[in-house]
Amino acid sequence: YMVSVYQLLFSLTTMLFEMNPDWVVTIEEKSRIPVSAYQDMLLVNARFLSLTGGRGLFYLFQGTLWLSFASFTELFKLAAGLFLLFVGLLHVLMHFGVAPKDVATKMREGYSKVRSSSSSAPSGP
Image 1 (cartoon, rainbow, N blue to C red):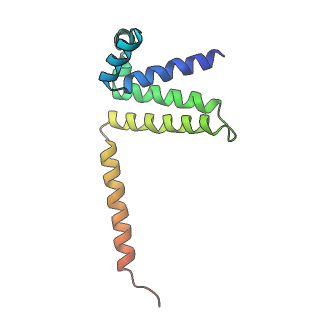
Image 2: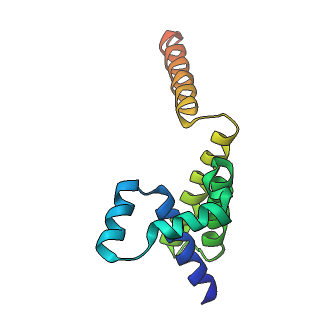
Image 3: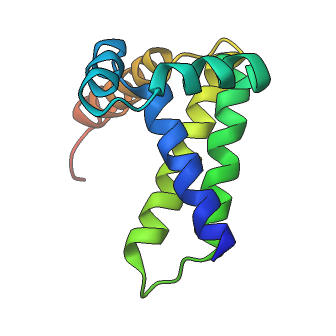
């Protein structure tokens, strides 16, 4: 059960860091839970979460944690783990200067080349 508590805490922390700052203020005002104080505490004590590479590694860790309990019969855990691994990989790539926009552009260019080469190829004997 303790690992589930960790997963819950890590998931809430992830949501807090990805949340729109206006929402953080709204949640804090409506629920009286010191959400921004928790976020400030994390920024001081877990500074790696404020860096793209550190957050990516944190997401990779969470993904492996979810996948360690996943199976093909528990599709939610499998999907959550794979998604966190994907997002973690994107963050680590961004840390090293590869932006998702650049990857998408390269994929589109490659697809265009394949499509144009297949349309210019002679058809039939």
